[in-house]
Image (cartoon, rainbow, N blue to C red; front, side, top):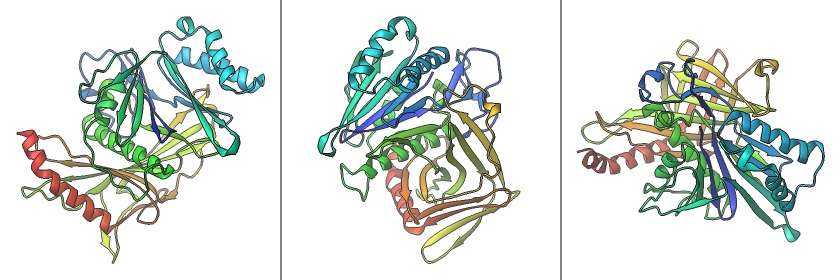
Length: 400
């Protein structure tokens, strides 16, 4: 199954979807960007479905409609094909009324009974304002109280939160996702409430946290969701997916005094869309040379000290992945970084802070078959270290 989630920040939607398709068969578990190839042995023995492949579950139509899906591949592909036929090929006018009429005529209770979707349509209004229209399947929603956590299986569960505001989730990952959302969190941002970049910051940092948890505990994979995440937002003119971003997972351990030293960026995952294909460049780094300048810490690894794996993640309507030509060079340089941390204590749950940064404070540069470099501002490293020290007594108490 899957996870679909939407956080509504000051009425502007941020839409998340995982990348994992699962199935009930005897094939080997799919290779995933976050974990080693032997992860399947740590999955629950009685788990019916197994991770089978990576694929996009999010599709954008004419820049104004974002669809995300969960459920059976066949039902989803058929629905999307008919939707494309009506609103793209036959030119049916995109409007709230026509989308609503299409959904009624489709007979979801018969042709989409094992699956779910979330459709967001942005309608431009006079004076520059927009109206956000949302369509759910299944249509029934359940309002979740964060304290009681009255979660309902099989429905869209909607929960209010001070940081993420209104969050709707559906699929096998919805419960675990909302449980993570409802945990108390200290959130700092230079962007004011209501600012578009603040919404992007909160959600990319959340993805980095999820990836870190997946890395160290299979938090998502154990319930057949995760494997990576894609995110879409409305930029004022159209929907677009977050692109050319590096998710970095850094590791360290607490010592007896509660100090974590300098966490090491062990896994880097760079997301790049080329037409309908998402390429994830996963860099597993085994050795760094660490240098300091007046302002930054530089981690440098050369060819032979890191492993590179390229993951091809097709769009929903890509029928033959082998027919899509791969780029020749996967080198990249980016200052769009979401970093998640796995800070561990012996035999205890890890502490998983995360952040998103846009700008020269954190950069990643990769030269294919040559080197990878992570540049991290010293103040960020100091802030994470101080936050870990402050949390150490609580972590020790909670684990006792």
